[in-house]
Length: 307
Image (cartoon, rainbow, N blue to C red; front, top):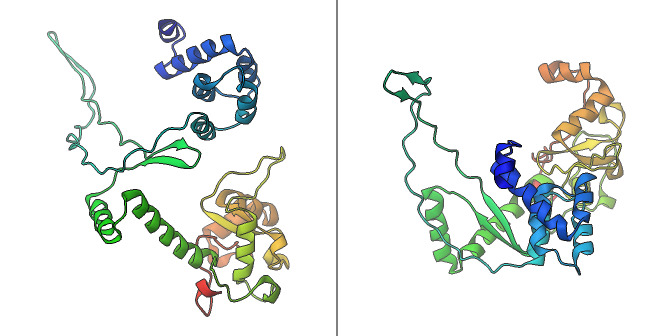
């Protein structure tokens, strides 16, 4: 079957494996083919779930896996079959080979064929693998400087590598969130004490805190089918009532949007031609009212962290 998939269907090794794994699992659980056909499950997800499906858990597990991404199914599998923690290690990678010479075309000679050297493979991406519902294996490639810093910090803290990294990330995260999102333990003003009128373009810290918490640090755009955007990076604060047309800083009328959807809303509010002119000549734009970038500090007369 594997050879048939490769040689007759011209599938890759990975695609051949997925299809064979699904076919074997479907012998015992025919519903898998139905769910694959109507799009509730994908090949990668079924291949991950198949070894852990039983007559007792099949219905409940497949219901939880419906319309889930590969990463979400990996987390479900980690719950079904937990793995022990892996040791924290730092090891030196082998020296990479020298860069390949420029690619040249294949040259044919009467007695031989000279083919160009293959370029070196790209570096492996960071690995994040769920071991159990609350534990992950994280693997990265780091510089010698980062290794030295980790060892120095570990020596000062006297804890294992995972605890050192978690403490460093937590401290950095708290500082950035306090600076960029006004997320502090002791805010200076509550939303009841905050002026949300359109007297200034500056968005008050209390408003930013409420909007970010309500939208769970994720783009709030919802399409016509009720699907919400999953983007969590490059978030911006979007005025549902454009500020340039009298909108206020009422948190109920402000939401988080990714950059693409914030631009989409701006083009709906002001027109694509206006936004094109604004992007090309921002100093000549008539009033596009760009939304505040959630990842940048807002102008203020005092420290943002204490707002």
